[in-house]
Image 1 (cartoon, helix red, strand yellow):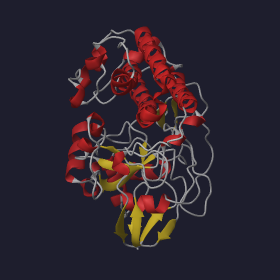
Image 2 (cartoon, helix red, strand yellow; image 1 turned 45 degrees about the vertical axis):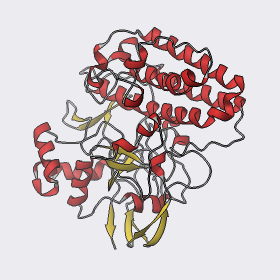
Image 3 (cartoon, helix red, strand yellow; image 1 turned 60 degrees about the vertical axis):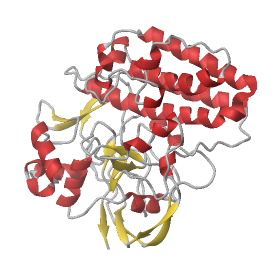
Image 4 (tube, helix red, strand yellow; image 1 turned 135 degrees about the vertical axis):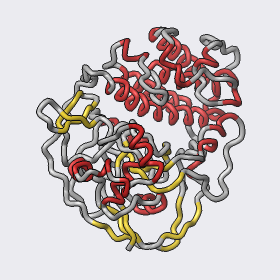
Length: 421
């Protein structure tokens, strides 16, 4: 992360931002019952209680303990329990076993959050805003990432429940038609990539560098459920021709037949599980919860390909950050609005690219423990771009690089097609 916060950041404005983001995290949890906080239905989907505690551990470990004189940790044992992967600060509790613990209780975790909040307020009021502002901002960006993870993990944890709970009482709009998908021709040439200018960026978004692009085409909008259903009904999940060798192995071993959360209702029609419960599959909405293997196979079936992350960023660099984000309260993708150029690039669904998550030329991880944030994951991951319906709007930039392994599909990930010219 570039850790670039304006030097004029005041304690008052930074504390207000801190409180706003922390309150948003807790508001996302408000519809949950206490039992929902402790479920972990797979190793990658952490319990909500763990997310709430871990983001507080981050502030406590990297800000309060080293910078606030006289600070006493809420419970020293939490240092191991809520450490995710930071080897530089000590051991961690087993990730797959987070859901095995009934203690600390949910109430104790909220008390922990309040304790940390008081500590951050004291830190900033003690005149440490200028010295710690960049690290506080990193912690807030980190918490926004976990806001999205709370929604994705809650959805998975509830999605395995045969009761199909309707956790978030929202009405997801349906019935709109998707605009026709068109090819947008984009020029090649030498282009600049990576974050530049003022504002926060993670370290993996730089250094800013030049790269050569061949002329290419990008679909005007993401692939819809209706379009992807054609792949399913054509036997795409039973035809090895569309899949990479590893993807075909995964499909067979796990018995995939459609995107995650797709299932047939009692009448035999397709429906999809959402955080508002199961709903009839909307053919006009972007397909979501597909892995990279599925996105790539669909693109091959269409005689297309996925965009590179350089192509995606080049196409999005001058577009406004507008779309269906977490703030809409829908937590589900909706059909694209009509447009004459590439649109729906931000929000609704993260868009898989064909690019491996690798360092940019000249990249160096930050020194110290925070250097573990991004750099050590630059292997066996693919890049996604654009944010989703679960991402906070202010958290997204055209240069933002998300990354997941190619078999991950519990995230709000979708498909945009590309082609050579």
